[in-house]
Image (cartoon, rainbow, N blue to C red; front, side):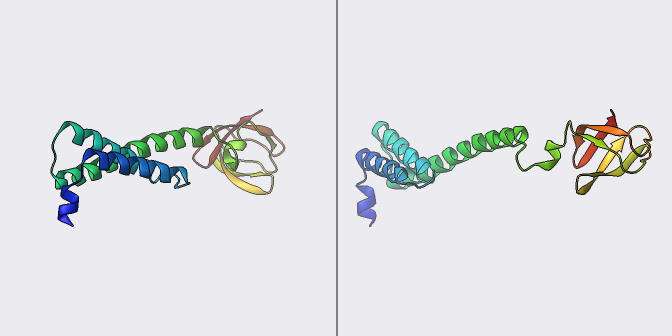
Length: 149
C-alpha cells in the first residue's frame, strides 16, 4: 500500500480533484467541492515541489480544512445578513410599524399588551389609558417599543 502511495504524481492528484468535482456535479451539496479543489491544489503544489507521500496527504487535509473553513465563514456571514433583512416567519419583525389600539391602560415602563391573539412585552416611556392608539416603532429582543400615535 505504501508503494502505491509513494508513486502518486501530480497527475494523480489532478485526476482525483477532477473526479471529486465531477462527483460534486451529481448532487453532493458542496461536500466534494472543497475536497476536489484541495486535491487540485496538491497536484499543482506537487508539480512545483517534490513532496513525500506523507506530506502530500497532510497538505491535502490542510487544504481541505482551510478551504472548507473559509467557505463556511463566508456562508455564515451571508446567512446572518440574509436573516437580518428577512421578515418571513419572524412575527416580531412584522409587527414594526403596526398600529394597535390598547385594550387596557398600561403604566410607563415595561408592561404587556395584546396584539391580535397573543400578548407581547412592551415598553413605553409614558402611561397610556385604554383605547389609546399606539404604534410599534422598534424591537428590543422580544420587547416591542411603542409610542402613542
